[in-house]
Image (cartoon, rainbow, N blue to C red; front, side):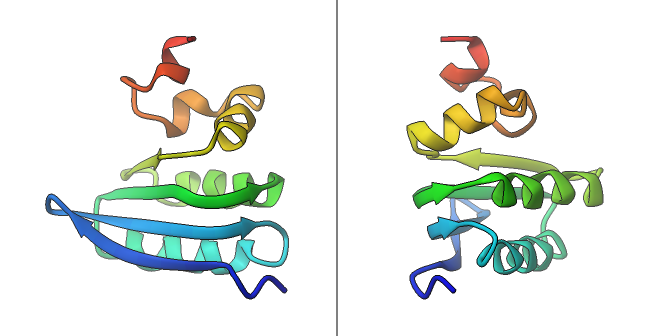
Length: 109
């Protein structure tokens, strides 16, 4: 198990943000899922800050997709994803679902 993985809820400009750090893989995905569930229970906008994510595989994508399905009335947004995370969202067709419309990746750049 990855001991360096962690999540913290921070508040920026009145928005609760889930700051994720470390590797998001099969061993840490359940922790990310639980953190998403907890934050979604108290806010209408689930913001995931991936600035500290050093690796993410399909397990992380699965958590995000399930959260989106589970929280249909809520907005779920990824911010500060690394090039690797952004590329993963692009090649899986999930960039439009999880990145804000103003993000360069969603504009096709």
